[in-house]
Image 1 (tube, rainbow, N blue to C red):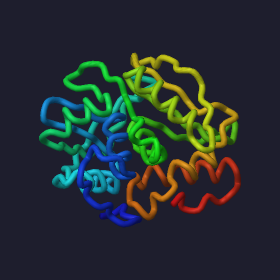
Image 2 (tube, rainbow, N blue to C red):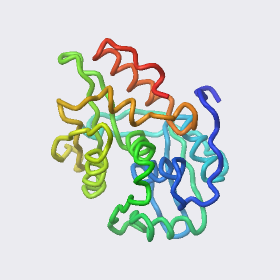
Image 3 (cartoon, rainbow, N blue to C red):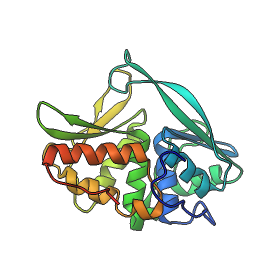
Length: 233
């Protein structure tokens, strides 16, 4: 594994039992996946994350392919990136829809993540890596962290999760993207260094992270603050 930087997580005994691994897994599914009868699909653009998700789900290692992705903010911009797609067959799809309120067969979801209250950081980490963006703003010398998705209700749920985070991560209101979806970002006054430490706490020991996204957030925070953030482990 070219991007492996930490241990491999253990397979989940029950994907619906609340653990750091299942919180991360379902955050990734909610942010970039879908549920249909008897099948959960989740995608990752990073080998570390793809292997971790497959291990947690007890599934075969996903195949690598190249996917075309439109920019969430500007549909005229298309990038071609590596993508790994994982499918978990069987009962977890309908169970997750019933327990967590995830959309099933295209129906609206309710997004009930209360079961993961004790594992909010890995849940938000999964969501951030699945439908979040991180950038360094050269003009302002600051870090931009935003979440983008077609489902307005999911993003409102993410805002609630961030409002209950420790440290508190204030956010801007939702806005529409040019491609027809929605997005919001951490507010200008948010402590992005504190957020980075919180959201990746313990990831180096658990293996539950995307190496490229963790590295980009670390480097952006270090550029903005001039302080070392270590390895966000």
